[in-house]
Image 1 (cartoon, rainbow, N blue to C red):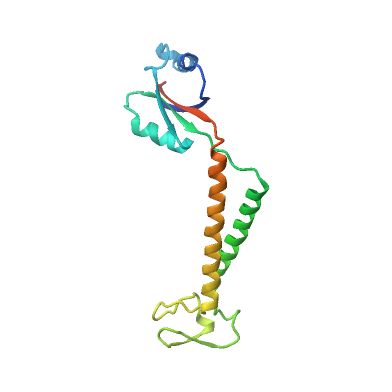
Image 2 (tube, rainbow, N blue to C red):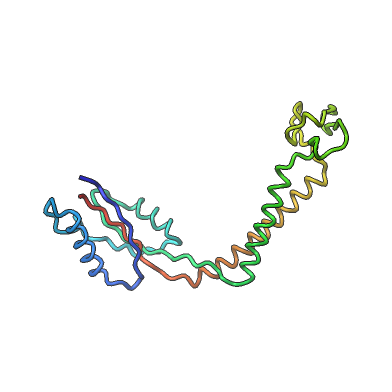
Length: 191
């Protein structure tokens, strides 16, 4: 005895009666021991278009009446741009993201990176021994110890990422207009 939920994807112009018959047959074969003759309820085909498969699943969860409700809702399929411009932007984004990650996590005044034994905090004026520095913040006042040039480099990388993300999003939106509409069907039955 088990409760089963399955999702299936179909083209927009699918024959709804054939889908119903297909699932009735499937469920009757799965639940043959209990003498089941098909789905407990007919599939409700909701004529609403979601922007993605994930949104369609969420829509189904929110509109499910319970008690083995069978639902179907439309969604836009995902289309990833395949242009060289898109590929170069994605590669450039990854490169900048790696550089940014390295800059943010590098301990600027560690003993390996600095020749002087002590560093002064710009905020509280404390002298800190570089051999004990384990982060980019002052252990006393929690101010950032990195120089303005390092902080500017981090901010520049973040601005570049935002610009590239905007361009990538524009290309993805343009490609999504070519997306096809499909049905997401949720089937719920007992075995």
